[in-house]
Image 1 (cartoon, rainbow over the protein chains, first blue to last red):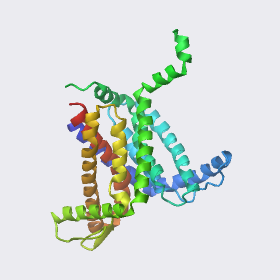
Image 2 (cartoon, each protein chain N blue to C red):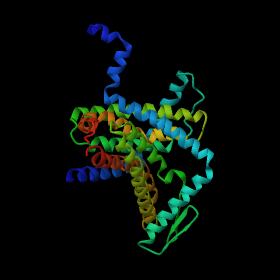
Image 3 (cartoon, rainbow over the protein chains, first blue to last red):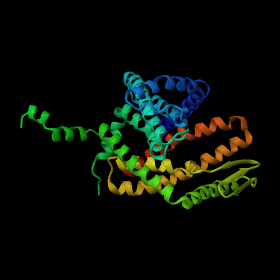
Image 4 (tube, helix red, strand yellow):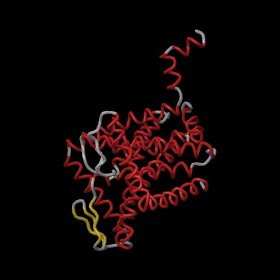
Length: 147
Length: 179
């Protein structure tokens, strides 16, 4: 119980710090990166009409992902750093794809289904990165129910 | 069948890949998210009155909860006010998106059906309660430390969304799956 509380407290502290970092600097930087990378990529795949009108608010989902990976106990340093790096790249690619919904629903809000996928994204990517730590849980859960 | 033949057989290769929970869980979860999200989206467009009612119900719960500590809270339709500071509850604030994600997590999890049948309604109720607490905290922050409201509004949105889901999921696994 003590371990769970420590993990929860760490999550709260790290995510508050990262939200502040995102608000103050990262959001504007990410918007610049997005504006530089997205249009040529869309052009390349024949979707040049899709434009980055506004950086959608949900792209802050980097924050819970990084926080979850950092506080998960039992991950090796290699898995944690590699998972963070690949996870962030994967999320960026997902943001590029989610932004394509701009073609049929322009504006700062994502449509409902992509919004749900976007909100679940940190959880999904984390479950892949933290898989070794979650294995015990999954294996135990997969056992047949005792009557 | 030799190992080489096994490697070439697409059905066998698919079964081998599918038996890997590291791959199966996220794929199943995405599938449930798309189905659940589509149903939710349909619900929003087909029953706008029910959506308004949910906003109002959440506002009532927040108001009643605040009423346990102070009589400075008022509620009108989907708006809750705490001593002059008002918030309007919209559909994204009622916790339904979190419930859809949590339900997808539970459905994709390799657990007995009975545990899932208990887990979904109880977990959704827990998420609703956490959500009422989240809005209440936001109202208190807005009333007492107004300059930090925007920051906490963003913070309570994505970070606590995930914290709520992981927390309730952890509780479900501990209480119902590992028993």
